[in-house]
Length: 313
Ligand SMILES: [Zn+2]
Figure 1 (tube, helix red, strand yellow):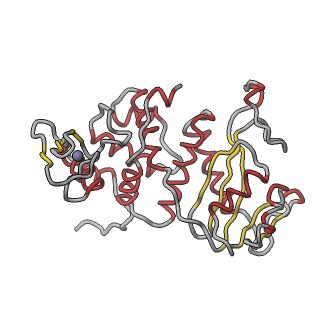
Figure 2: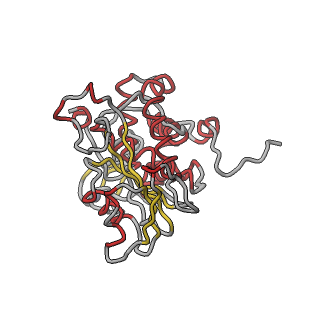
Figure 3: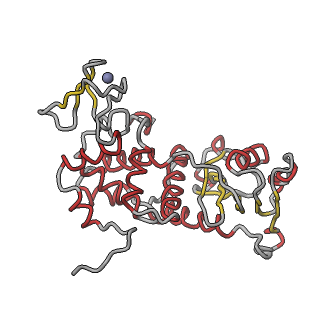
């Protein structure tokens, strides 16, 4: 008798068993998109839908007279990739803690490097869903990722001050025992950081940061937050329960991915990679099993489209 698995493990072997054919993946994408009844992706109609026998997954809507599939209006729409490879790529992206490079994906899926690269970027679009607000006790911190100042054109350097070395700034918030929100920012001043906290953290929460001046206005915002700091500048990192270690752990994973897996990424794609890393952390932290993470990724793709030109321009 096979050993009982934990709910959160879906092995690569399980995946191949679950999706052995193109049709099985099409069935899966349809279930994610509309459940049991095909809904026209253009007019929402369900009454005059006809499956196109010669084109698996394609339907005709008699109401608005158009063709559609379960992946119309997603980044998978115009890709000429075997649907099984999408599932594989998404699985690998979800389960690799520090990410997966296009070079590795190319080998895993037997596709060209540009195809692998483009697939990963398309899948990342499914990672950027809006979270509910964070609350309770949260940690806020900013970090700098990437490039060497010497390699950069002067006009591209960030005006962040404080010795960032021309790297790209990312700000993040982690709820203790909960989720992470992070995004790439142009500046790490109060005008950027404070509204980011306001947008993402419930009033009444405890907010812990380091002693950077940018966070000084936090407690003054109509007394929304209880703000406390550790004085990193003075070598203080933990004072009782006041620290930013959990959000700093996120930066450590992000940076290991940046250097070890992706060997860097450009500023243009920073947002997509930050989304990818936070998605993986959030879905993993909540002990959601891998199947549900895949569902959530594919659901996140609806309404997101991008062209090769937009990615590379
Ligand atoms: Zn229609």
